[in-house]
Image (cartoon, rainbow, N blue to C red; front, top):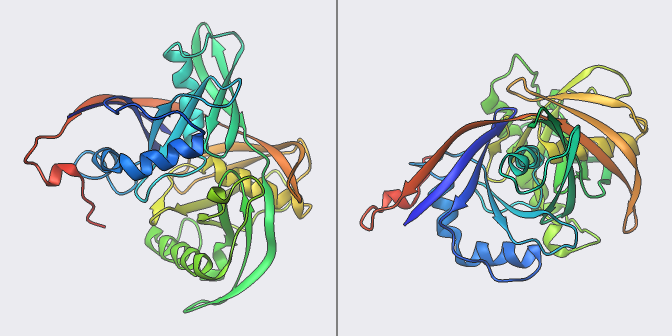
Length: 332
């Protein structure tokens, strides 16, 4: 077995793009392709994401045949737990990748790349100068505040207030100070434990729904913020803990989208106002509310999120027939 990949990162968050070795994926909708890969090819995700070739926090992208009219490419996202529905850092990387690989004809000063994700069509705008792709911004699917001003009793922390918002995936949003945490002072392990505790509790007790498809109605993770949501020019920090306690090194594109939806619904950001979002690693995304929209019964927004991706390597991976550990394992 041979698998080939190109590795990139956006704001420090890895993206392993599969370039060869996967068998053909049957025709169908993107969610049907996601289900097929999950049910029949999950051993390949483990080979690429898990040790010894990956690590607990590795992230991947598998390009598949588009189904939506007008899509230039389609992508399935993968991580330590399975397959997500949206990934902004991956969209930023794939926008540049599509230009560099000739998947879309480049145009200066901006080339549009239409990317079909499991959540829907995402439109990436890639800056092109002197034939080279640079920064990328994207407009995702309608994002909305699903439930605001919620509270729950969490063991060891008392009453925790939170919102739940959708930005291509559902996130719980909570001020980290409620857990006695502070960016720059508290251990990352404590952030992870707090976020995971809230996610696990809400998965068990807080049902979700999405107007488009039931497969989108799951809590992807929790974003702990510095509480600076109000209308201002300040940089606001957050950490996203998603899937199986995976930590995003970037500010999280779909998470920034969800935060913008919640902020707009609560009157904390205006249309066209740009905020800067900083990750636990210190990388930054820009984020703005481009316009309002609808998502079923929900008042929604279209967010514009921007960042920069870089190449970090390319590889050819093999699996020898008698190498059991080579099929993928995790130690945490």
